[in-house]
Length: 455
Ligand code: MEV
Image 1 (cartoon, rainbow, N blue to C red):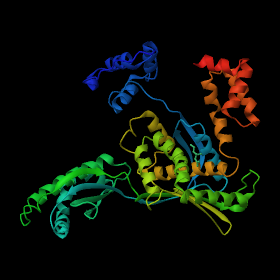
Image 2: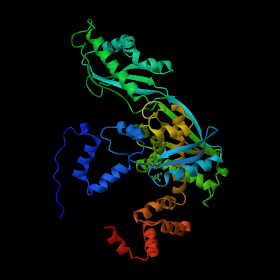
Image 3: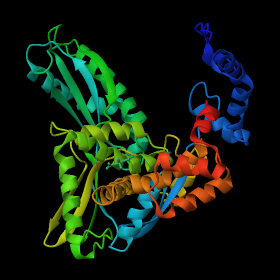
Image 4: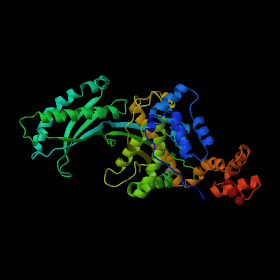
């Protein structure tokens, strides 16, 4: 019987050296201490300077965590050719992106349009005065003070053409007694701008409290402002890009045998289902995010922010729906995505992480707007490939083909066995069961022996 582990909380962990942290972790949690140490050590970078960067990105770093970094070439975007860097573990994503890129390369490529680049943050506060008009007037009067309070923080951003766009009072008292916001809109140029926005909001909140406290024309009660939070919003519906593709239905030459018109109609219906049916929409959008997240991660951006925003945007009308849309008009197939994307190509880890720097280099050192365009295209391409398979052959054919090597690696197949099995499946549909069967046959073992061997 397994012994229950005796665990006690650790104090002051972050102050320990990396070696001591590793020792503590291994001695408390690892099954095999020698293997545990070897593993953590082997994933550290050979160059101490590079490793140091990683160590300092977060607290308590022990080692690194690898993801494959792949490339999807042949993306024709607004007339320029790109090779998209993608960091992702899911077998079929890069292959699907590349397939869509090649398909649209021959049909005019992807087109994009930046709709807006405004970001937003809020000072959330409570004010219990009787007349909101009093507060509204005061806030309007205080705007120059807010600007002065943020003057030093915004100087560099203003020099680059960005900064604070507007500061507005929002009355939320219908939802919650006394709840107001200062909604502050920003242009953060090529930076994602989270730190910049939060610093501005903290300065504005302090200024609001000071100005209100010294507004002696107000009653004692009306001078009281209780600031609850000052924080950017990751919901950025006004930081929006559109990516689209189109071609005559006759030029689709889809190749599955169902015919161009039937394919195009089925495709539009598949998108329609995702527009109206949340169960489908979540999976549909997940596939879009396969492409977007992979580029977002490769370029050192905050994929949690991008994800949170994408799904909030997909539900902005009160029901969760598709991020992409499609139609056939006058014999032309149109497919597009409207995607809120708050991204940066300066700041954060963009100039620190060696692979991020390289990813940005191969994208031609894009501006934040250019990266928005590229990421939206990655999402649209991914969705195109997924729907193309879904409405024809199904996704398992392509997906399992890409997943085959994972199955064979789980079975600890040799290189020679892998080569034979990949060859075997060239003209067959891969399934886990079929892969195990052929593996056992080649090895000359029974499936039961496999189970015994593995456990
Ligand atoms: C798998 O990661 C993503 C898909 O399920 C997306 C979709 O169904 O549209 C293939």
